[in-house]
Length: 477
Image (cartoon, rainbow, N blue to C red):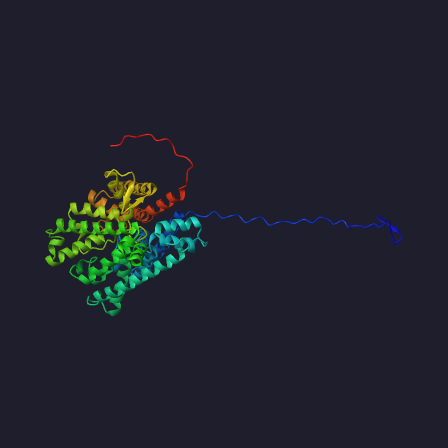
């Protein structure tokens, strides 16, 4: 076959040979290893304490204009950030107005609730978006609602905190208005300082400026004690519990955690009030020195504050030993999870109590209000309680070795108060030597972060298993 005189295939086509090109792909960026939430929490709080220590050491922070020794500054900063309230110098008279502002700032920074603070650190310090696992951990510890609403939850907690503190500041400013030598700005500042301190369960006070030791000069002031007591209770419950109550209103609609926390809190307050009133009613150094009509009020106030905050209208050093043992039990339990309170938390105590009652009833699992609590939650509660007891024994032994001049009850009370971030003391705190102060500072730090960090670590390690081992019995009792 021909095409225009040419045969097919007569035409040759040359194809240019293309030289292969080399392409270099950039090396993938090294994936930064993400910090565990517990470690972020520890580093964040340690950083706040370090910054607070450095500022409080400055001459401008002290009333006398002198440099503050590092141990005193560290102890105060740790107590403020961990919202404890233990002090080695009088807050009102030793620190300057600038120092008071720094202390309030440290209290506020550390008192948003341990889980809220950790969420802020995850968002701001690590400078990354929270991962799904971190959001789940935050949700579990805060009792949050929707999984994707962690950032919104933090905002709502901040609004709740500032609103409660603002209302408390106004009421307390009115209560301080008639105190000599405070003028209107002074009364307002006193109201703000003590409102922030009370809501965050810190127990710091500047009443030394008006010649008082803590709230002893206001033992008959119903408005003062009532306002501080209510702030302590709201701070000790936390946003999650209050929000659930406001949203659902009816008892049957409340979450199991809310029901348990409310009932246990009420029971602890009643038991504490009855115990203090019974043991101290005729004690001439405490309730016995007050008029009969205000004794019950002070017993109620002491039951509220000595469990989480550390304010006192009585002389704690004059309490008899049976009262001290009850108070130490209350301090060890503390307030609700996700709140500004310390201790092993009401939730932990309640879970263990429900497990004990369910076992006594012969039930195969822990049950309350028609709901069953998972075994893993009971195991975590048991781990927190037993490790906290072991830590308290260690701190008590260390203080006994470093400060042997105090008796055992005072040492144990100091250890429990530091670990529970309560701030109550039998008066031995200012007399502690530097090594003992460092031990107490460490106890406050662990008490503030230890239970939550342990729960975060245990929750992060939880994983499903494809099999279960054979069962074998072990004798107990």
